Image 1 (cartoon, one colour):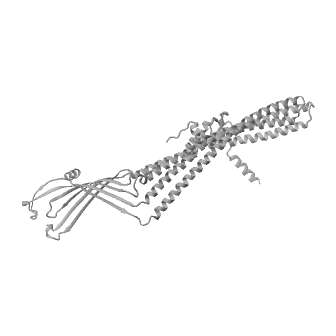
Image 2: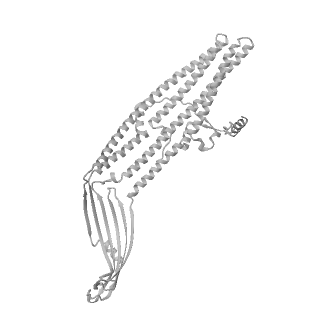
Image 3: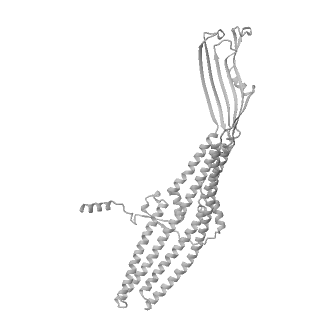
Length: 515
C-alpha cells in the first residue's frame, strides 16, 4: 500500500501543470482578431485551401492533349544480298537507306487531329541502271482526321477540361463554405466565452451582495438585534452562490479552451502560456433586412447551392455527351502531300542506259528535293469517308437514360436545397425578431428587479422585511441580469446566423477570397 501511495505522488509530481497566471501572456482579442486568426490558423481551412490548387493542376492536365505535339523520327537501313540476275551488275548488291522526319500534330476542338509533317530520305545502291544515285526525297504532308457525327464537337472533346474547371469552381466554393462556417463558429465561440465572462461578473456581484448581508447580520446578532438563526440563512445563500461562482469560473476556462482550439492559437506558440480575454463590447443593432432581400442574397451567394448548380452543369454536359455517343461514326480523312526528289544524276555514254557505262555525274543535294516539296510542284491529295453503324446501341442508350435521370435528380436536389435555404432564412429572421423582443422585455425585467431589491433593502433597514426576501430578490436580480445578457448574446448570434444563411458573413467583415 505504501508503494502505491508513493507511485501516485510521483505521477502527480510529473504530471503537467497549467501555467500560472504570472507565466501567462494575456491577449485581449476582439472578434475580428479571432476571426482573422482562425482563417489563418484553423486546420480545416488549411485543408480546404489546398483543394483549389489541386483542382487547378487537374485543369492543366486536362488541357495537355490539346497542346501541339512534336514528333521527330530517324531510321537507317542497310541491306546486302547476292546478285541473282545479270541486270543487277554486281556480285553483291548493297543498298543503304536513311530516313528522318519531323511532324507537328494537334487535337483540334472539333475532335479531329491535324498534323503537318516533313519526311526525308536518302537512298544509295550499287545496283546497275540507276538514274539518280544517291537519291534524296522530301515530302510535305498535311493530314486531317475528323469525326463528323459521333465524337464531334467541343462538347465531347473538351469534356475533361469542363469537368476539371467545374471541379476547380466547386473546390473554391467548398473553401468559401468552410471559411463561412469557420467565421460563424468563431462568432459562436467568442460570444459564448463573452457570456461566460460577463455572467461570472454577475455571479460574483451576487455573491458580494450576499456576503455584505451576512456581515451585516453577524453584527446585528452581536448587538442582539436579530436572532442567530437569521445568520444561517445568509450563510447558506453565500455557500450556494460560491458554488455557482465556481461553476461559472469553470465555464470560463472551458469556453476559453474552446476558443483557443477554434482559432488554433497553438500555431502561434504554447497556447497554455496564453490567456485570451474578449475585448469587444456588446453592440446591439437592430436587423433591417427583409425576407425578400435575405432570400435574394442567399440564392445568389450560398456556396452549398452554387455547388449543386455546378454539379448540374456537369450532369447536363454528361447528357449531351451520352446523346452524342448514340450517333453512328462518320469519319473524314483528308490528306494533301507534295513530294520532291533530287540527287546525283548519272550520265551514261551516248545516253544509252542499257550500256551501263557512266561517263559523268550531275551533282544535286537534298536541298533541291526539300525546295521542290515546299514549292508544291506536285499536288497530291486523298479524301475518304468511313461510316460505322453499330448493330446494337443498347449500352449507349442506357448511358443516355442514366445521364438524363441523374440530371433530373440534380434538379430536384437544387429545388430541395432552395426550399431548405428559404426555411432557414425565414426561421432565422423570426428568431431575430423574437430575440429582439426578448432583449427589450428582459431589460425591463432587470430594471424592475433592481428597483424591487433596492426597495426591499430599504424595508429591511426599518424592520419591514426579512433576510429571506432580500436574498430572494438578490437571486432574482442576478437571474434577470444573466437572462438579459443571454438574450443579447442570442440576438447577436441570430444576426450572425442570418449572415451565414445569406452567404455574406465574409463580405460583411471585408474578407475576400483570391481566385
